[in-house]
Image 1 (cartoon, helix red, strand yellow):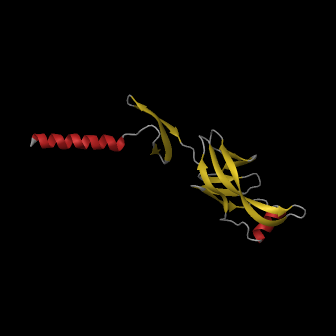
Image 2 (tube, rainbow, N blue to C red):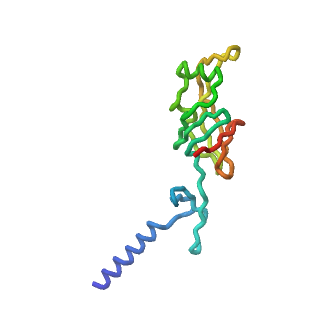
Length: 157
């Protein structure tokens, strides 16, 4: 009987250790944020905050996008150029419409994605269609701004 109890206790201990052990490279949630295990030895675990694009970002014109997972949608339009207004009138873009798609981490503070580009007749600023261009998104070390092709977006929330 004592031997069975001992075996059960050993098995429970092993299961408990396996359930809570973290290997280098795995991610853990702490206070609602995601961290990557950088090292785990000698009773000391070092975590690195995994930056996230999720949230609301505002560009220089006042336009806001909301990033969630691998997609960003237009959540507010700021000052509208005649060409952007024409693209909205023609249904090429809208609030709730995609701005970035296929967002994928490509480094510590960088992501690759596709950006919705409105095409125009440049002689009269008339919207003629859309296309998806490949972009790189680079986040500042403090996580409060991102740069996309020279445009800076600031985290609103």
